Amino acid sequence: MALSFKPIRPLLQTGTSPWSRWFSYMGLGIGVMLLLGSIQMYINIQRLVKESNIRRNGFDFISITKTISNETMTHPEKNLFTQQDIDKIKAKPFVEDVAPLLANQFRVQLSAGRILPFKTEFFLESLNNGFIDTLPPSFSWQEGQEIIPIIFSSDFYEIYNVVFAPGQDLPQISKETALGLPVLITCYGNGKEQAFIGKIVAFSDRVNSILVPETFLSWANETFAQKTKMEASRLFIKTRDANNPDLVKFFDQEKYELNKDKTMLGRNKMIIQSILGGLGILGLIVLLLALMLFSFYLQLVVARSKDNLRLLLTLGYSPAWLSKQVSKRFLPVYILIILVALTVVQLMQWAFHHFAMYDRAELSSFIHWSVLFAALLLVSLSLFTNYRLVKKMLYRLN
Amino acid sequence: MQLAIRHLLPTYFTESATQISEIWGKDLVVEKGELIKIVAPSGNGKSSLIHFLYGMRSDYNGIISYAARNMNEFSIEDIARYRRDHISIVFQDMKLFADQTVQDNLEIKRQLNPYHPAGKIKEMAERLGIGDRLSIKCGTCSYGEQQRTAIIRSLLQPFDILLLDEPFSHLDNNNSEKAMKLVLEEAGARNAAIIFVDVERKDLFPFSRLYHL
Image (cartoon, rainbow over all chains, first blue to last red):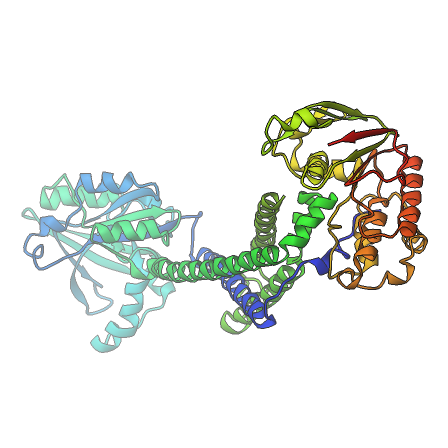
């Protein structure tokens, strides 16, 4: 027959008022809730941030420029990226690849020819093909070729149609029409002038520019500007996660301007994570205080029941068995507190998912398994520390 | 299983105590089934000896061994096992839980290593005349009743040695005889040794060896 704790239980004198005990329970409950809630929200944020990135092949692409300040505005060379800058960025673990956006160094004029009465000074840029999101096979150029394929920024296209065209009394153009529309590109410089036909072959959501093949731009810069060495004022970064706080921090430190939209989540993530971290620490402190309160309570119980416990040991009760039994006294309370805290966190998660996140697929209405694991760990940890504490005290009594 | 002492002397006694005592500073081996009586006037360390043998104190010089193991090398858990399975005791000051009933006091000991079924408590209590006191808190019982409770408690577990420290000091002759009879029966059933310490020689206990402390 197993040894029963039932006749032993009355020998443990609690002697404390139920109020103080309920306060301890409440403190513990709040601490556990804050901690578990923080863990769950942390997981939610991670999931949201992960799922919110529009990725291609698992990478994010962001463009950076140097911040133009009053000091550097009169020295344009200071706003260019040197090879050293590029190497430094490349060496960072969160950067997969870097490519410069090279611009024309000569005068470019764009006109719609006879179709539209429209003529403007313009710019062209080129970027490594690997960084372009919409790359048709026709995007190439060889010397002697009259037609230059162009990848046009979707944002610029939108600005033309929504703002520019109505104001200038120009027609609005659909994407399909724009793709077939030839434009006249005239390059001037180095005493030369040459006209080409530009054809939009794709629109890019990623690159806010007018892209031409690298081969054309390097030929044109050499021909019209006599420049072979090119320095970029804009870099494109390929990264696994544009919201990596380390990446955001590094570029902030280097005073580089980032595409804020793409890193906004990263910045928010940093702030939210700090808040959650703070909440988690607060929860941990409350939890520790409550656990300390419990351990004091346990010590009080042992101190008040000292004579009875000593007599039990004298009669032949094992200190290890007694420690286990005494420390198990709080098990139902711990389990109840954890269950209540889990229920509250579960309700909060459901409400957050349903009302704040409108049932977004990347989140779940149920708490994450790691929250349950943390709860289980808490119970085991409290039981273990209680057991060690009581055992130590009983050994001292013997 | 034998209990042996070698050159045992409390640390607070001088060597001169060994000259007049038949126990202090001497060797003694207690075998199973032996009935040993030790008598001494008050203040000669009777209770100290019992506490040493029970593993409650270790402020002595010399060696006490049980089953050829030095008791000073026992761990706390070893001591608990020793008291649970091999040695039982009736303390001079009874050592009962005053706020618990007689029944609870007995059950607390019985359940630790049940030698008898629960019903035996009632039977023994009735034999010693406290059958109607089982539901009374020990703190409200007379010393005589408490002493009988302590005696019954000592008989509810298995043991090789039973230590009795002035077990009948609060009992009249009639009750002492009844208690002695029960103790002898129980020890006999286990083929256990009894070490009985008292202030004077009484013929109630049929000892096989007598020592003066």
